[in-house]
Length: 240
Image (cartoon, rainbow, N blue to C red):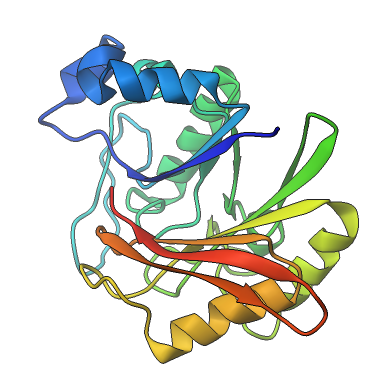
């Protein structure tokens, strides 16, 4: 049986930079969680920080996050196969911060999606075959300060006129579709009526699993089934 573990928002911070820099995996996540992650067929996290040693914060409301490049040692030690980059912090250190993050992930051999040099790159899904099952991962974020545009780098924006079509197209290529949606109300456990409507529409368009990140708290969960027989699990928040 295929086993995929989806982790939530992940950010090395000043309080634990050292542990990431030396790859102290047991201190970072503990033995039991390390074992679970290493026994999984595929692991997914939201990397909510640019990896760069240059400090070039953009103008925005809220904090401008950054983690040193050498924290990749600790990130890699937790056994990530894939990082979503579609979030409201991935462009906190400008275009260079995003480009450097992508270079570091390429060097580390970790897959990613949800951000790019322009909108066309940012919207591309990630497809992987696990035990003969083709899995498609689509990452998007609500509009804040880091959204990609036609000729500008950033995260893949959720667009009700485009994103649902992207899911339908991805479902035609894959057996199982996962949506990582970065949005919702921070520190609130329940979806707004609009967020619930969006996530249910993702299922109707072919998603098997929809995970909302960004709320920084454990959220509600539901199984949504449509008349066609298509059904999916929706998680409205995972914490950190």
